[in-house]
Amino acid sequence: MSKLKLFITALIIICAAFPVRAGNRELLAAAYKTVNDEYLGGVSAGQFAIWSLQGLNSLDKNIRVADDARHVTIYYRSQLYKSFVAPEDEHDAAAWAKLSDKIIRDLRKLSPEVKRRDIEAADRMLMAGVKKLDKNSKYFSNLLQEETQDLLFSRDYAERRLDGGVLYLKIGAFNKYTRGNVKQSLETNPDARALIIDLRMSPGGMLGEAINVTELFLDEGIVVSTKGRKEDSAAYYRAHNKAVVSGLPTIILVDGGTASAAEVFTAALKEQGLALVIGTQTQGKGTVQNVVDLPDDNKMLITNAFYYTPSGQALDGVGIKPDICLYRTKVNVDIKALLLGNEPKECPREDREDSKIDIDVAHELALMVRRAAKP
Image (tube, rainbow, N blue to C red; front, side, top):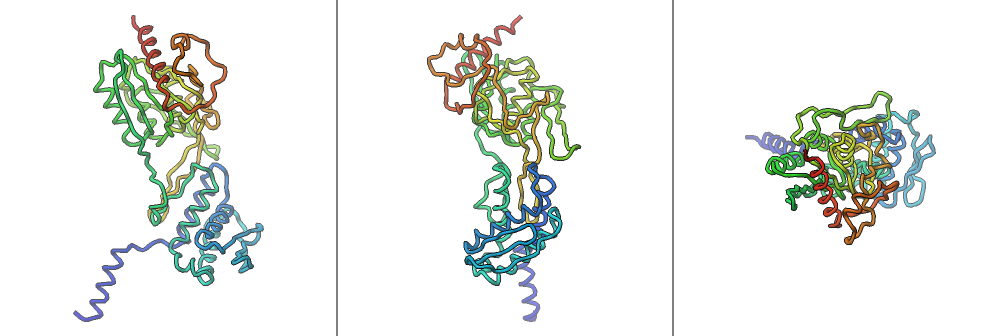
């Protein structure tokens, strides 16, 4: 085999081992368009591009980016380097991506750091841009995996039996394992007399998985609805499968850390009359995050809609008021007197994950409901 053929063969092997990455322009255009079209806060492609370009400072601290609506100006070492004409249409993601790519190419000639780390430029930019949106939107870089968090929650799930045949389940977050865990717990404890579901400090998780778990308790009806920026964006999610649980007295424990999909699950059971809720006011994180696939196996978690309970109540900034408030409840509380008291007018948020008295109260309430339900 000639040297030329050997060289070509080696080149093919190298290219196969290292897949070609999409260009900066393609990645940036996809991300800019996603924010422009879907982000609940209504940020234009142009504004997001400026925020992203300012992230070049993470590659070289000497870089500063400014804009005056007509121009994007680059400063280097506190000196004006170059001013670029901004696209006329602030919503033209492709035009803003083209400009961003041009700025990166120019800075490679100026900054040794940008030249050395240019493969990171678009990822660093998008990580910075997304941080300006809201705390729930994220950018996940395939290149910089060690610096980005996993999309899946890995919170624990726990099960145990309490006195009186009460089954206790602790759901740390809703992920692809949660429905299977809950279903197995219910099926292996068919003689349970009542159920406590502990969602204290549960950050939520995946909406689809929360709906799947809700279907274990609900035969039919709306579980949750969502609505985004557009008038026709409303979506309704209903239970379709036959419930596994029927007539089992259920108590849900919540606190100020109960959020998002955990609130969706709680509201669905509460409003359908399938569970009593005790604890403190939940967090009120009622926004939906959609996972968007970008070029090069990158992903963006973008806030694109609000959650609404089955009765149409907004969750965002409001949360769920428990049926029985445990705010500032201490270990020496008279549980029966607490359970027989009047419904509180207000119930402030409080983190109570480690409070054993909450489980004691839930246990007593579960037995009371069980006794009341007996023929």
